[in-house]
Image 1: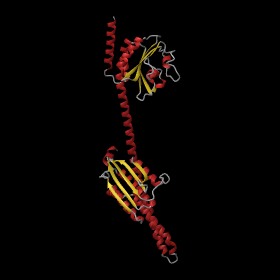
Image 2: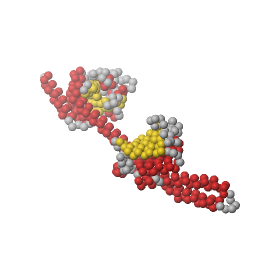
Image 3: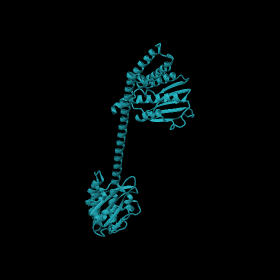
Image 4: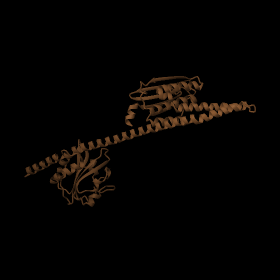
Length: 412
């Protein structure tokens, strides 16, 4: 008789193993094996509780009676009625009447389904993989005192069969969630990058439109006004010496305006590329400053600038343009160096000078510095502002991944 019982149990365990094959989610496994388990441990309610990888939350999967445990999203382990089992404090839980058992009812416990569905007799054993508790198998009955230690041992055998499957499924679920999160993060990042490029392109187009409007209207008006003043200064009843300072001021305004217009539409950049445009601006700015400044241009980019998206190229040029202008206007340097470099698909442009420097960049973060930071953010570039290694002068550095024009066009 004993051998017959053992053979019957063995056949049931084999049946559970066969039913596990091919199941791809927790709920399907519970539904598939519940009937076979009922022949070994009769129950009105069966559930498996799985601990999340963070060790703080758990989630339940049920068969038979449906309770709030499975409808609830992952819940804190500290509120589980079987928290002592899940934490490893006890090897099993066996209760003749869980409705009145204080082990299941404590402050903050999510134990209401026990009372609502009269789950009196309860049996719980851990699911273990390589000594680690990954969850628990639970059987409940409406009858009081329905389970014995023999049922506990049988439940442990069933748990040993289920645990490896649940462990593998948990790992697969976590990998899938991680892949989804990573994919969504990459999509958001790419969306932000493309959006930033579009915004930068729109800002540049507006800047050029303003430059053309200034040329076609404002500069033309100032030119006509300057000629009228010249004619007036030649009249016999006009005091030419009184108008001369005004004429000089007007000429200076026109000169400044022409510079603004020139900078608003960098034709050298569009025709010849970033490196040539930077070198042209550096040479012209130093020459027109009237200061004795030695300038150097080092292009170690190995052609990485050639195929840059036009919007990115323009933003980089504007940043360098602002950095050079700041060095000349505020630093009184003796030398200015612009270095272009590429390494491991990263492009960097650095402008350094040996002028007065910025002791605290936050104190002098005017519109120029703010504009450089904004332009760098819009093209997903890293912006660094500080003193040189020898604590003299200022260093402005921009670093970004090399994204060729062809790649950007494919993405958009």
